[in-house]
Length: 202
Image (cartoon, rainbow, N blue to C red; front, side, top):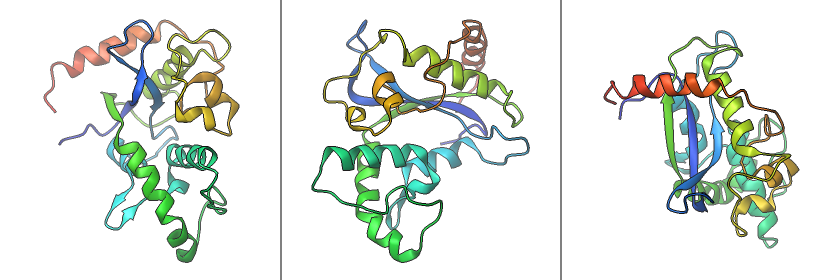
């Protein structure tokens, strides 16, 4: 399919339903890309880093914080699994990567059951971009780190096994912005972008 060059994405996870509307899934991760001036990453490039590789099957959790977090929680949830090098360093030798591949496949399998939505945000890279505004305010709104959550994670949600308190408390696979207050005005920006997307065929 054709993907917009830039955007914000929202992941949904099986078994994670909204409290107010159990027929709808709750958001479990919000993300974007190219928040550094002159960054060249695209929406699809970022999503493909999360997805992993098909030939050979696997992935690179050092290039995707989402994969790293999922893999860590899987290891914590199943104590018989041991991958001592998981999350160690920003690069790894081929031998280490080969030893990690089986677990990278587990992460890919877990992620493959998720669905996602995205909103096209065609702006320039940078920390003050509309994408950055939507990402951080969406996380702040949906996480409710310090307040009773709008949508509680299920008792069996894998995120309960995360080693990161912010993930366990927020119910999101996000570390940043979960403890911030959101600015309601971002919803107007979000709505304008969604209305624009309704006029475009992807």
